[in-house]
Amino acid sequence: MPNYEVIDKSINGFSPIKIIDGEFKDIEFCYGSVAIEEDQEKDCATLKFDYTILTGEPKNVDGFQETIGDILKNILEEQLTKNEVVYAGGV
Image 1 (cartoon, one colour):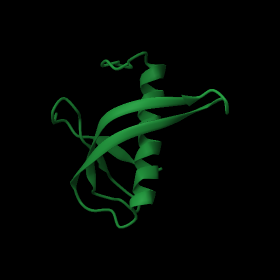
Image 2 (cartoon, one colour):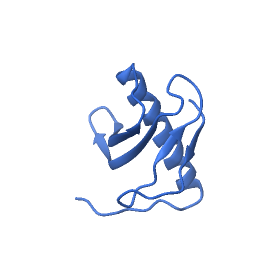
Image 3 (cartoon, helix red, strand yellow):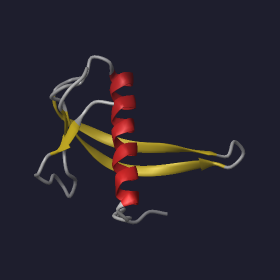
């Protein structure tokens, strides 16, 4: 997973993220809605999310989505550890 930084400016209530190394260096993006979909038959869950690219253009879209999925997982794990997860509605 590449290093990243949260940019200190809010866009519609979301903080943009800039990838600072690796294949997607200098691409800035912002997460939108995030959901966890459970599959009880397989006893697993899938992380689903929307995102908007603010600057840059990934040449490998599938790789980019996997990378930002890993970043999101890391952010969520850090927030859970610090007891800082914020739930903003949903079903």
